[in-house]
Length: 179
Image (cartoon, rainbow, N blue to C red):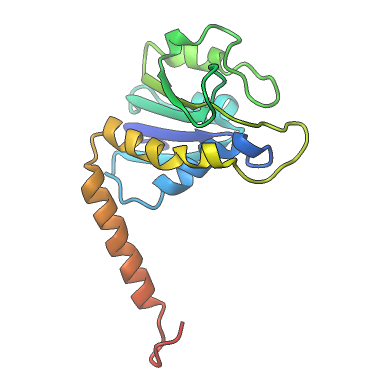
């Protein structure tokens, strides 16, 4: 099975400053032990053109997209959108590709939520590595929102992540206590 029941995609390009928000959230989410019916994907720029067309609506019932979205708010503010909230042409990637069309094709078959973060700076076509402080501060809030949307207890997820980090730390030590 290519994708399970719930697919979470982080869209964007980390080479264009705040456009790297989606992949940064996907990276954070990948640290959590999530249920087997959930898959987190760093879709990069492939979301609309590859990832979304590979979803089988017979299997995948929920799609959560994490991306920057300019909705006129303060940098780092989050908003949840339904596909119906995105007029054709209103949701584009850094290359001006319209992302609403592939979502319109799926919206009656799959429950789609877009978590948009207001960017401070997108530098395309100029390269700039690194997310601004305002957008970086939105990553933990976005992780919590995603966990809430998929019904994962945030407190238990954090505790499990901490246990795994402690175990990885212990496994990385040598007999002399050095790593």
